[in-house]
Length: 415
Image 1 (spheres, rainbow, N blue to C red):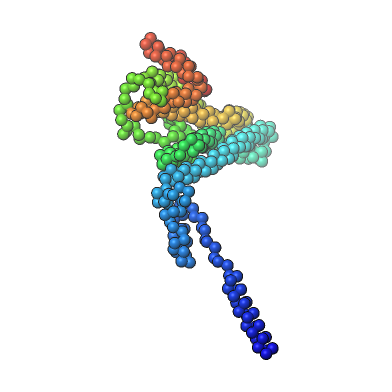
Image 2 (cartoon, helix red, strand yellow):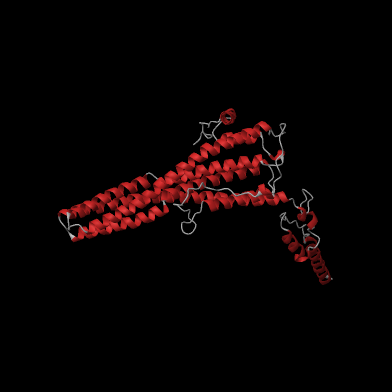
């Protein structure tokens, strides 16, 4: 009887144990998977894995907006693209800034080194005239020859102009960066905004290249040309004929404003652009003369130092030519004549861009697309004038046409 009770007790315990084990197994929780909006392929993969064919309905991924993935608004994709361009522009700002500092250091270091070499060689040539020593004569000739080679390279690349190019590129890329930020802050960007930002970025890359070999801007062109850093638009080819403005539009554009902008263009072309083209040509000619004179003088000094000991004239030629070469080099690279040429290129390009912007706005067939008062304010700010000063300039230009005289005032008050 006792054994029967014991076996019964063991059987009930084992059954109780199995029942408890069965009851203690937890239910599988509902699986929730957060899927990105643009990850349709990931969703399909999760649906096919482990048999979850109905756990994640593809049509209802975006529960907040009830929007299907294949019907996602294009503005979202445009925003992502514009942010990608923004990051690329920020990276270019940093690159051009660093390279600009590096090339400015080139100008300083090369100038100091070449002048020190020239003065040392001239001193040796002068000393060897009194006591002709082969070592001094040979050293002087070699130093003058080295200075000639270094000057040829330095005058070819124009480090001061290279540094100014990178400074301009940094400023323009920063300007583009702020424009993209403004677009993202004010409204949802479109594919047209993405295309415009991409074209401006590539145009700046072409206008201010980073490498020296192959794509470097020609430092001594046959003709002085303004810098062009904006994309050339073909919109004018298919643009409608501009309508005649008789009344003021909702955006502030009127016939008086159109006439004012035309007068401003005339002043810019006849005064500002023409003056900077003249100054740019002058600076380019001076830079060419200096770039040729420096190596020529050091070459003459090297030849003179080679004949030291064969007459007093050789030492005089070597010392005099060396002193002149040092002076020319200091004036060219210490005075940064190449930087001045690039500054004039940039200023002439600024006025060319302003002319094209005003002309394209006037030729716009859709009057609602003309910015009106906002455009007038932007033009005034670019020229360093107030709105009243800009209107006074247009009135003076109109009066000069009526009187048959030329206006004696520049459009820009900035530079």
